[in-house]
Length: 334
Image: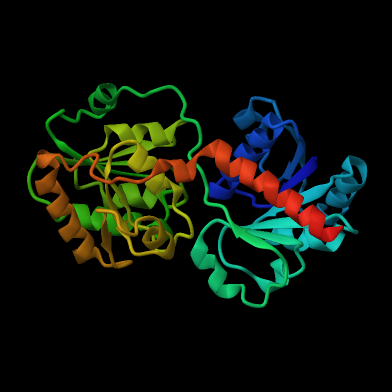
């Protein structure tokens, strides 16, 4: 198949990694793939040049994308996020459009799509009127980069090997709960606990200022293979205010971390039946209590207690399912 992947987000987030890795996987299956997005050289770096990419500049979106569709002549267009779906459905001219919804289903953007891929089952709540084929395909574990020495990580930040190390990995934003985490951690007493925050974002300067008085809190900034850093953590915390499909929880579980997460819809779906701790969104005292409990249990083999069946997040399986859904949509459109 000739597959055009379209993502019109301007910042690198979860959907960017998703569409880049999907493009790479589809290419390995023998499909001809072209990515159209606004993320500069991101896809080229991620795929090491294995996937063709064209830039869609803001202000020329419709014109540029229409030219790409005419010249590439895809068998199917796969859009990511609502803006790309809305534009692709305006320009498709008979080419089927499959849309992945990374957030909520939006009728204005997705109702005209010829197929919809959900990344979580709970997204079906807003799709009762959608008439086309739809499927849930969970995100998958991406291949990790070179292993990171956990001893070296602790040494870099002056963290004793005997200390309990809490941590988070992701964008440093208020909406991701970074201030809730800092405030909750500040309630822990003693010198034998540390907090490592990995990532960058617009609220990083404010987060550093909020934590300035606590020498036990460390900021690692953006790291090229952040998921591998999870192996250095005893407890992984996801304090987000909203998450559709928090793949980071699966990555943390694969790294052997104990899990504390807020009760977002995505976390509740993924962690159902698991021994992870869930706390109400934005409830700093409840988060602090969970940190205190986890601190006590780290010494009695809390690591590796979560027992996910990670085969449900197998990369090859999920990408193959995506290609099968393309064929289903193509057959329906014919």
